[in-house]
Length: 113
Length: 114
Image (cartoon, rainbow over all chains, first blue to last red; front, side, top):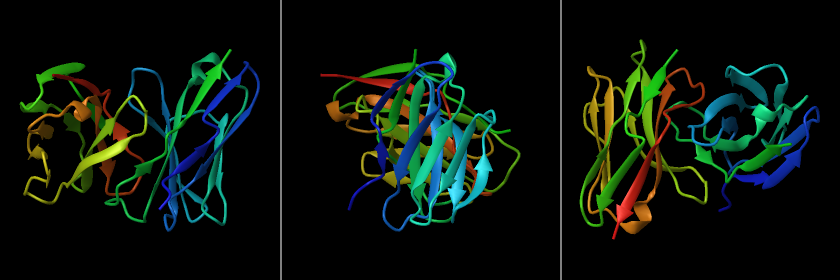
């Protein structure tokens, strides 16, 4: 079975631009979460979506938004990019329930010039 | 807000020996879950082991086991018979029973010496 897939693998943008990152969950997983991992740090929670509704949000500005589609895939959008947005963006999917482990994709490496 | 602290930025162990990685957390909740994830240079986060707070028995997965001390809010990972493939960043993570996202520690870089 395919794992969590994310695209693109790498992305280079300049300050002020916007970016869209994509994630396809493991088949059967209806919950998708997004994390930002700055170099040398642990991942930080951005959003959780379940059944196409936002179920949780971390401490990130409104420049960050996301949505989940009927097929449970998800997009993370970031507007007005800042140098500090340079990071590895990880997507994770899981079955319903907080006891269910999250399975991560390989991430998208975003570099802001 | 919950916090997760990993006090060892880096640990080194000889191949075939045992190593313990430390993790403490702070929470006022009684219903939560704890996880250890491994992130090799390939960067994919891989689940190593998980523990439900309501279970007193420590979780084990082959060479990996945890020492869960709920009163002390401590959740250490023991790796027995260390192998070269165990070399990676190890992250301790907390998740509320309310099913929000994971809160991660800063990680411990584990080096396996042949």
